[in-house]
Length: 288
Image (tube, rainbow, N blue to C red; front, side, top):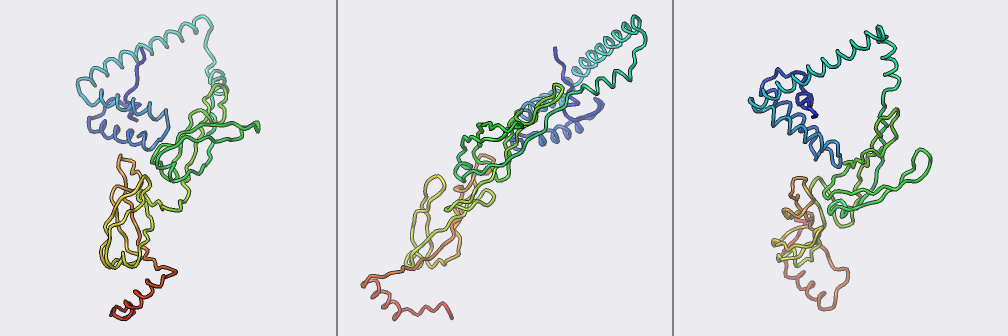
């Protein structure tokens, strides 16, 4: 049976702690290894399971006392077994040279391999919807190796995807390092990403802006109808809730449309007559 040191898992040095100290240690450990902070990190996922398990046992006084008795019994049993083995070897082999043994262990200690970091660029749409990508990197021998990665939907600029064990090889039986892939979201022609909001331009005709209208606005995953109030000007913003980027909490930010009042470059004869008539009858002067 494998006994887990729940106090060590929560970052506590002793079992002589209060319930409040256990709660504080749990919050700190859960925040450090939360899946949102460690995207794609399998080790972090396992670690958070142990953290939740440790808190579930230690936060209840009755189960904490039972765990303490079981753990102490197991710990002292292990210590007695270890001391018994040492005494046996000392009887038949004499005093062991602890310094040489320590040096040998230190020399052969496993060394974890270094992490490798790289960066890839993905489109705004791949970042929003999620995508599977293949990347090729040179290994230490100069040969190309291809990796398949899953870009989770809603990933943010600068976040990293971790591939466990795909870094440099470990030494003396040590684990391999990891491959860390930083995400860069390229600029899009239609949308501009700022936090969890998306910004876009909304062109309007002069008469739509002057009279007010109802127009369709393209979103990243479709389109939606919005009301344009009378007399709106270029540069004004219309905010459309829940049509922006993923917010990391199961919801979305806003789509913010910036008004661009457009003037036709060419006029038909009839249009020119209407504008000439408007020029004569209108008292509007934007310069006064």
